[in-house]
Image (tube, rainbow, N blue to C red; front, top):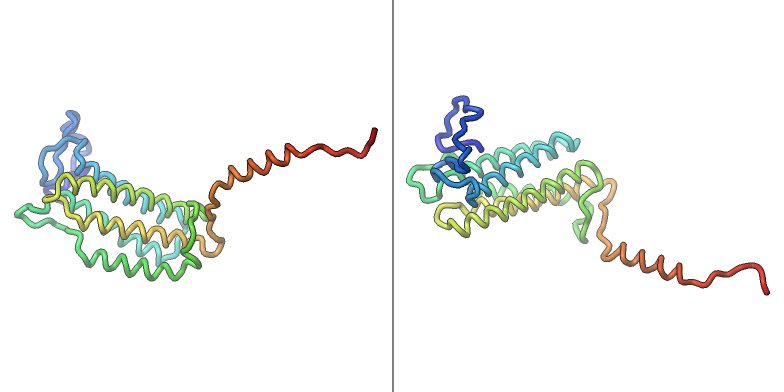
Length: 216
């Protein structure tokens, strides 16, 4: 895990062995266990950023979408920098998530929602490659949000709740982007109990008496 405590531009050591004890220096939170919920939240957000990058790299997305996601990636680094510095730290953090981050995401959601033909109904993740990757990224973002809320619940004075709210808005953005990526080809809709109903119909068909052309 990158140490954002000093935020130094110098080339970091690729391995030091300091984390072999199961502990790490987590920003200005100091020495904590690697299983600490704050570390888990940081890592989940780092994974979310990687998932966004995969959608950008392999999804063949329009430039307007990739530009938005590039901005999101920078926001996510702001977010982990925020998580790395206690909210009640007397020294300022190099970056904090602010209400303006959320407002910009909400505007992006409203904008890209217009490109999705229909946002109603329940859809299965998939369709085009772009949509599948965006749905996957959305799932990772939602998991990151839950991890951050756990950290907030256990450390309410030191973990910024705006970080979780940002992730909540980001999952909405990933959803509308995925729906938009399927706009031309159509979404794969959820049909409740589809396989069970198909099986039931097959069983009814198997129970029908056989009819033949011959007679006694």
